[in-house]
Image 1 (cartoon, one colour):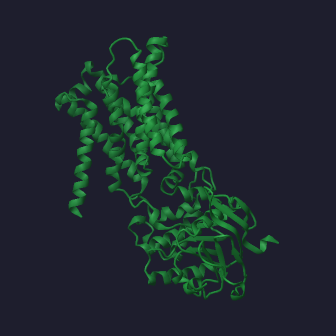
Image 2 (cartoon, each protein chain N blue to C red; image 1 turned 90 degrees about the vertical axis):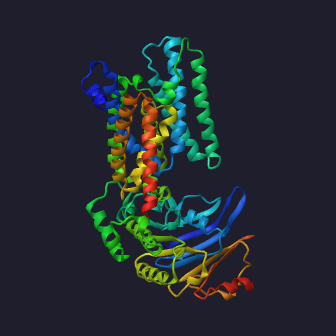
Image 3 (cartoon, rainbow over the protein chains, first blue to last red; image 1 turned 120 degrees about the horizontal axis):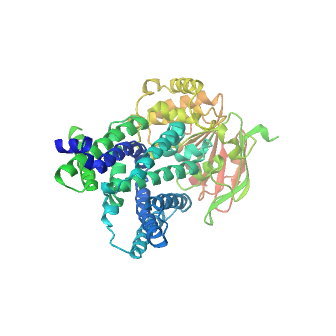
Length: 280
Length: 252
């Protein structure tokens, strides 16, 4: 444990760890806020679909970079573009298609994954897919740090300005619409912010584990909050704790960072739920 | 001319995927009327409410609410839905719920001092002041209904639409709710929808009965303030005065 803090704070060889730690802590702000909406609006399935579509974007990004020769095109750009595209498509499907929404979203989920694999087939050289699927803090770069800062400002500004409307749209869409609020606009806006959040999450915990880190901190926070903004703050605190302790444990015992973070979150969630059950 | 009535339905028909739900409906409701729409489940009550709120459009006919189209009059309608449809885990307090009635006017939806004072005085009117900062989910059924009523009133409506306000509520609490509604009715028109005929009390001025299967009421038997008989091929909407009881329908 001491080694972790020494490496984190002083060791010049562990720049990647400092970067990962910083990105993880800063990203917790966005995770807590957006995760709260995802949980209360019950769109974690949609977030899951977006995260798997991101794989298609990463694959396409790598293809453009390696095969087409767009060297400036970091796969994360592909991830951002595809995530936003997926958010809009999924949002429209869920607004327009009254029935079989889950089937369509499930199809998008799979197509996104398959697209990524097909692109990667055509990229020469060895490719470590697991770092995208399960996260790899070695991959976190300065671009991620920029993305997290921009996203924090964006998410905070939007949620601060439109807080009352977002709460209303999440809690009672019908009533909000009757009050003249463009509920479809806010729904798509929420999904787009979720999409950008998912891209960040993919860098930290990987595609497959995204949903857990997005939903578990708010789910725990839900138990202790009376208002939505309280839930966001508590979720942020839990998220910081999970990311920090997860990185620390994974570093100390040489575990995969993404899996360790998720394990800490999941076990805490189960403990909290059981604790609540036994007390009542 | 049209301003005499707060609500006019002129030959309105509506169907979901070719299944007719409402056919040739004609209703007129006076200003400051307390009208009740009664009918069993699946009779088209909820569809009627959706039509009035402009959530769905009629296939045929014309609806005028407060002299305008339903969508244009939306901001002047206070709508109280059923409380069972709410997520009981969503963290929201009673006063925040009531304040939702003030949304829609401004770009950012920030609540003004006036909004908060209005919400406070309405909470007092529905006797929930002590519960303002409690989570909505912790209230009893009757209190939840009153909180949702407060939210509808917070819209400062000219027309109040209530969807099944007596569902899942004790009769004694029902009484309180109706006393409250009687008081509110002095300043605005109320339209209430219910599947349960039991509550049709002296409070209500007029009753509109909806049911696909009910046979037509003879016009001669009906004498209300406004007498209207509406019926289509398989739907009847009948309006009568206070003595609307279940047996009348079955005897026909």
